[in-house]
Image 1 (cartoon, one colour):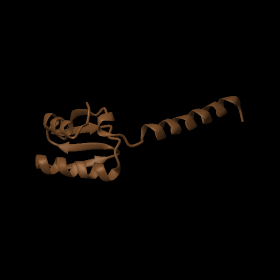
Image 2 (cartoon, rainbow, N blue to C red; image 1 turned 90 degrees about the horizontal axis):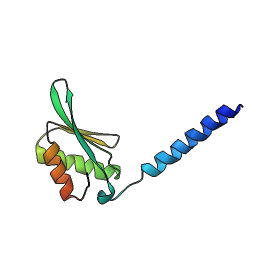
Image 3 (tube, one colour; image 1 turned 60 degrees about the vertical axis):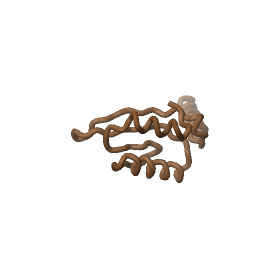
Image 4 (tube, rainbow, N blue to C red; image 1 turned 90 degrees about the vertical axis):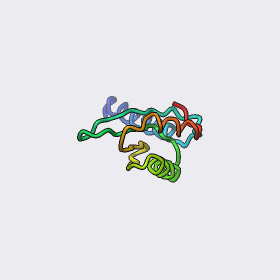
Length: 101
């Protein structure tokens, strides 16, 4: 095994450790959420990123957002996607819950 391969192996292990510590659950006040809009097939989608809460809590949150805004949405890898332009309303609702932007 050459020296370069060992360094690559070390970097990969360190990256896995970094992911482990970054993916832990956090309190809502410890979050730094990001909201932005995307256009998909001519329609607007509101994307909210970087949730570090349990999967059960994420499902409860997306369910509440969808019912509050009367629209569809999904949860993918800790990212909430809501159909439509609800950035301001979503931000207000999440601030009430204690999340930080």
